[in-house]
Image 1: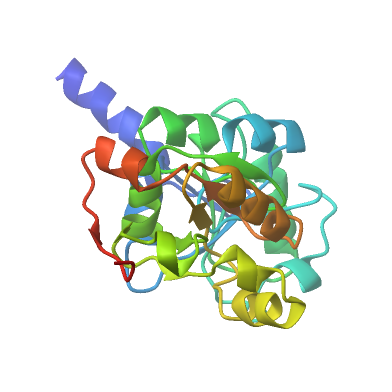
Image 2: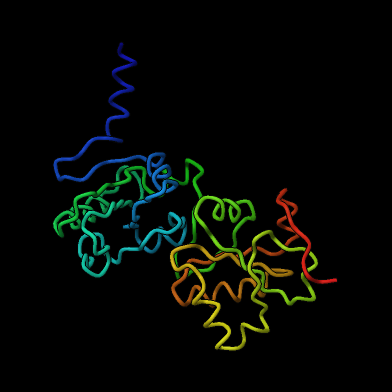
Amino acid sequence: MKLLIAALLAAAPARAKTNDGFKMIGQAKLAAELASANPPQVYDANTPETREHVGVIPGAHLLDSSSRYDADKTLPADKSSALVFYCANRMCTASHDAARRALAAGYKNVSVMYDGIFGWRKAGRPLAPAPGRAAQIAPKAAAALVAEHGAVIVDVREGEERFETVPGARSMPMSRAEDPKAWSAFVAALPKNDTIVFYCASGVRAKAASERLAAQGYSTAFFKNTDQWKAAGLPVEPGPAR
């Protein structure tokens, strides 16, 4: 009986409402909601230092302040939208401040993911670099971002180099990227809230493209090449080069 009570108490925060009016949910529930047909809007209330060293939940919006952000400019127009805020861990309350501000602005469906980014990482959930920062990523992590969060993979090699390609990867050769109009058209076709992952032949061009796009406010990452992808046990397909 004692074990049962303890288990129920441990599970209580995942479905309980606080006195402030927002709900408390764990990382597993948030992951399930993000995979649903109607995912919530997620907001990161962490410091730039935490984002730099740990990353963010893929697709999360970054708050410039947990207690002073502009709700009208930051949050969706529809006040019935599902919102989830998170910060570092169970001891961090920046997410609580952010949730209170959303409630004060008239939003009704507000939650805090109490495990924070460290709990998310500990559970093995995918992480994305914060927008504005390019980071090298392991191929398996990139594949997980594609499968679970709609990340886009881009091959920046020239056509003559593309003997093998990552399935589903888009092609944006660096020779074309040097054309401002071509680059602008490429960027305009990218999803703004998903991570863009680049690769090339050795990682040099992929890093350059990743940094360029990150400077435009996108969440980006890069890995070296298809050899690294294959070494991770991931599939490739024939490319157009002969």
